[in-house]
Length: 194
Ligand code: HEM
Image (cartoon, rainbow, N blue to C red):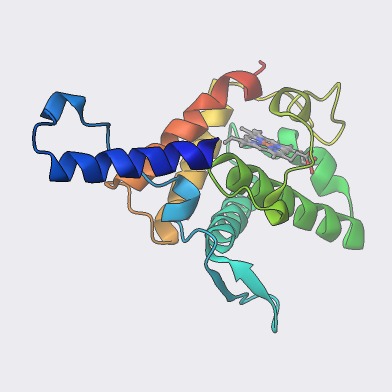
């Protein structure tokens, strides 16, 4: 059905070009590519972290941003500043050795799935199989969430994603950045529970 609509739309657009009687007001709004497409989409590229394997470019872009964000959160906690995210990630950080490494890798994978799948990367490789955002961020339903997040925690977290996006080629003054922030803001309400 979706496919059919797209075909219909392109036929209409061509028709408008041919029959100039179409008024400007009747033109359908231009379609913006999904965020996933703008981050590289389904084009297959070599996976820099897994020699010999290929990865969708959109997924690779997200994975880079997610891993840079996790790096900034860990640095935040290590700095021990006031209002840091230590308490939230305490269960994850108190794990040791292989368990911690595995769980951080899993968190990276789940975050990459979540962002990819929900912004247009709907191939099976990106399918998100974790908890919903309310249950994920409630210590009662996810023992790996240390304490509930408040608005300030969320703003800080979002700032780290923004910095990680900047570091990976998405400048703050672009439409793409604005669209990513809009997605993040749409998640504030289910995630902030304190
Ligand atoms: C842009 C906002 C955020 C998004 C999209 C997001 C998304 C996610 C996702 C997809 C997971 C994995 C869930 C699973 O594996 O079942 C997760 C886990 C988690 N998130 Fe968030 N989150 C956000 C903000 C926050 C904030 C603000 C905090 C705390 C300050 C936080 C703390 C955690 C913790 C502690 C976990 C659990 C780690 C684990 O189970 O391995 N998140 N989040």
